Amino acid sequence: MTVARPHPSSLPVDTLAEQCETRRTRRSGPGGQNRNKVETAIVLSHLPTGYTAEANERRTQGENLRVALFRLRVTLAIEVRCPFVSEEGPSALWRARCPHGRIAVNPEHEDFPALLAEALDVIESTQCDIKSAAETLGCTPSQLTKFLKLEPRALRRVNERRQILGLHALK
Image 1 (cartoon, helix red, strand yellow):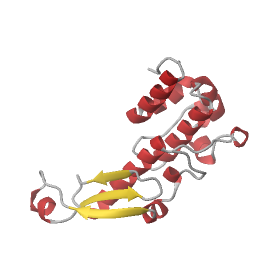
Image 2 (image 1 turned 135 degrees about the vertical axis):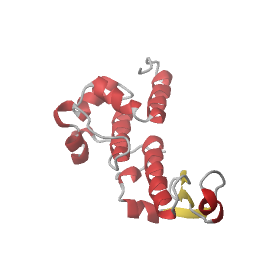
Image 3 (image 1 turned 180 degrees about the horizontal axis):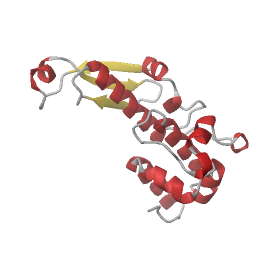
Image 4 (image 1 turned 180 degrees about the vertical axis):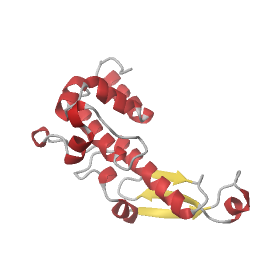
């Protein structure tokens, strides 16, 4: 799916939450009576794209909502593509997180989904040429590949696309 910028994974959490249908539910399993009797599980459906995310492992609705929103942002980063304009270069966020060619972000940090989306948009714009994508993003191909490995679904998606294009898989 292709959408216009800004990428939905880079939207402020409040804005993204407004675009979602939120369902509260119970889940069974370990966690005692609170888990089994109180609707602490959260299921989000992003209305513009139809993608969903769920969280139920935390004890409160608020914590599960935060986790579900993060999971939704990662899913959107992987599944939704935005056209990348190479003349504009990488975003300010990317430049701040990639000083001296090294990508510095924890996969659990709130910036991760937006960075992942940008990397995947650039990779798609270069027809999965990792060397060109890395050059555009101001990092090395090995740094970009390591970054993709932080989210196995993203690496799998790139490798599937590379296979279609007749390129070898990234390892």
